Amino acid sequence: MDNSSIPYSQWAADLLHNDQSTVLRPVVLFLLVPTATFLLWHLVAYLNSPLRKYPGPVLASFTNFYRMYFAYRGDMHLLSKKLHDKYGPVVRMGPNYLDLDFSSLIKTCFDTQGVWRKTEWHGVSGAMVEGKLYFNIFSEVRPEEHARIKKPIAKYFSAAGVAPLEPHVDAVLATLCEVVDQRLAGDEAFGPSFDFSEWMLFYAMDVVAKTTWSQAVGYLEKGHDFDGTLSVSDKAYDYLVTIGMYPVLDKLLDKNPIMRVGPPSFGTVTGICLGHLVARMKGEDGHDQSKPDFLDRYLEAQQQNPEVVDIYRILSYMLVNVAAGADTTAASLRSIFYLSLKHPAVYDRLKNEILAAKFSQLPVPYAESRQLPYLEAVSRECFRYLPGNCFAQERYVPDGGLSLPDGSFVPAGTAIGFNAYVLHRNKEVWGPDAEEFRPERWLQADGETAEEYKSRLQHLNNVDLSFSAGSRKCIGMNLGRMEVSKTVATLITLFDFELEDPKKEWKIHNSLIPRASNIIMKVKKRSDASERISQMSSHY
Ligand code: HEM
Image (cartoon, rainbow, N blue to C red):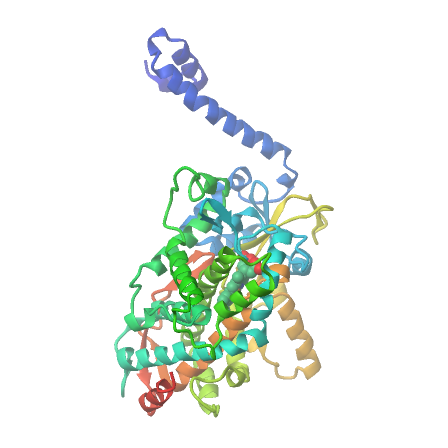
């Protein structure tokens, strides 16, 4: 009989009552019962949800698999923007998740007390160490525990705290200049084409290693991902953002107590960090005491706070530096060069400002590069245009609920989130040219008084989520900004850059951090570059 001509339910019932189908019966029961329960559960949840009043894709209101699919594809930022353009400032993007585009709520939802808790998806980046689940500063979602583990080291990340790390950045920056000089740049004409994006990751990873344990990993010198760590790190991020949309799956995969399933985790990086920690503790790493690094500070923090900082905690501090500090900085450097070169007027103005500056030495000291207003404006515009985190920064609505500017009320326990990529392109906040790359928006405009500019800048600062805000604001912001500023000033002082084909677009895979590739570039040395580089390198 042709089963397609009878209703599905009757077909299933016939199948169950047919004595001859003794093999099929358990199979059908096994499939039907959970499927029906799953669908019914989702239907009841949908009908009862207080979020039903909010617009969004129908599928998204039933299941988080909707978002998971776009997280997997790597274009979550584009999806969020498209949905906000279609539905307005509130979009229901999950059964219990609202994506918001209200900059007026930033101060409320990114509070300094941790009342607005991070949602569980951040916890997916926790790591199993000897059978125990360890959360780091990024992945810890419990506010009290987050404050407890952050407090002993917060001071080392202040502007004054990171200043002594500048010699470490300088040493790696000198290596970068040498590598560009010897392998990539042409003397009189532009040299061969190469993918700038991968070199920025080699550089940023070496810097974070050097500032953390005083030794670069060696990506710049070797010129490739020689130990596979960079590719593992990409996969770990892909896993975090995809499984993070359904965190319960993490318990069956990466955190499965019986058998770990899934892509490689940060295990390799953990091994590298552990090796350096052990070597330091045994006094075997030849560390120069006159150049303190993060590891010195973490060991100091252990002395001062033994009840909080044990050896595992130090390891997690080291690990989060590597996991959170390299890809973000590389992404920012890629954006600055690519977006400026795509807008030749911007690149020319930036280049002219840098070449006109009389720097006291190379690498350019941060105290000097940060004085350049156009460099600062270009950096901030890049952070705005393509933020280092292009996923929603999620929080749970606390007791008392949340009143939205549209007059509606969101109950406690709802997950809400702000995607900086969407917020930073809101025309009501940033003006009609919000979608344009225009660094001048960060400078005093013609006819604008100093007072007006100050107040406009203050407003822009308040609605800028490039480094997040409140108690979960990026702890490494001062280091990241120092690195970006002095690296751009130093590279442009020594070399001229051009895109191989200015019409070609970069490729972006958004895996929390927008991973840009295919920035095919050519470089030319400025007249005295090689001589200045060899002078500079002799100091390191
Ligand atoms: C220009 C470079 C950087 C950018 C754009 C950036 C951006 C961000 C953003 C947006 C967040 C919030 C993420 C979220 O909550 O979902 C964050 C958090 C964090 N960042 Fe950065 N970051 C940069 C550099 C660094 C560096 C150099 C380090 C460390 C050496 C670092 C360490 C961290 C840590 C530990 C957190 C978690 C903070 C917490 O939850 O308390 N970042 N970063």
